[in-house]
Length: 117
Image (cartoon, rainbow, N blue to C red; front, side, top):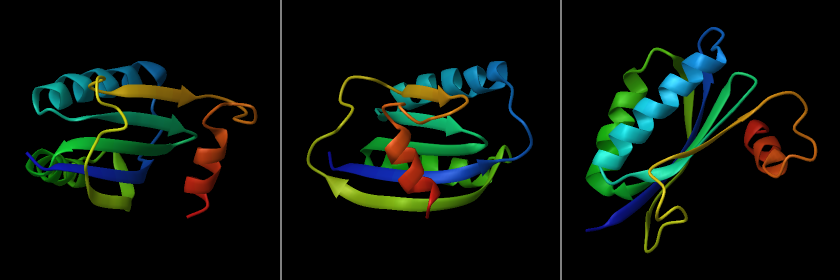
């Protein structure tokens, strides 16, 4: 099985409440686990940043679904490449919602760099 990594960012359409974000995360976690996809989902001030790893066919299928998802727009692929090993081998989907000031947040620098693109 060939593994693939895809990293993208997108903009939320409208305001997403915390309970809506939780629903998105729980659905993604269950669906991704069934497809053998692991990764990370970050959300900050209306911006999603997601890293996905798994079988190339599963990542491709998920990307098609994500492009049709009306809860976000302006999807930009930051990385798409074959990989030897996963960064997130055990977790179906980790997530973090950064609220308020991200300075001092462990993922703050990564979010700053991604948002500059």
